[in-house]
Image (cartoon, rainbow, N blue to C red; front, side, top):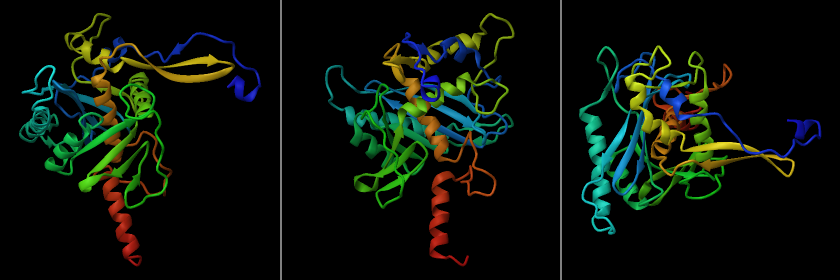
Length: 317
């Protein structure tokens, strides 16, 4: 601020980290068991990060105000791959994605009173084995879509994300994401990875009594010592904090950049994709002013676009 408003550049200092830690993530528990959707949640989303030997998935339930609950995460094995060879890789990845989605279909998430809550939207990382992911998503239907991250943080296909301002037949704008039509009618979700990773960390840094905080499933400790469930989230928490955003002053200018603490960040990628999916389904931390059109949580962005199209076709309705 002093640089921009007072013409007083800050002193050259070392990098300043955001303050997020794995310990903080571990301690932010909801009190609800795994796979249970807490009361007040209206949307369930999932992100899937794809590797040769495994899929890392994260499922989240959301309240309309942006409060999120990580209700499930884990690994779906990719069976049939061979170390040092890509023989059979395409089929193995396709079968693993299908197995994950079929498991959800027969074992849905539920509310505390037993009501089924299906996953509204799943995003699958298509930055690697892109055509395989496209094919799998086409086979599995509308509730699962391929996605790619753009930005300077780890795992992005390109270093720059460019917003789409106006819709076209091949591009549809979103909020930190846009849809890009690919061959065979596949719609790819292009994501601003840096923005959504920052948003992810901000959720864990938000006070638990404020809207927009993020929780993990399980019973929290009422003492300084970690509870059994908190200890069990150690690996997930390390993934989420494997990359952090830092600030440093370079030649009198405040610069923000991402740095890696570990290459094991698969749950971070799956988590931010679940965030993007929630935004696509209408979940917002910052709501539009009263009176302006806002997509409904149920049906989300796609339903809103359909209503706009109908109004243009029938202006008197």
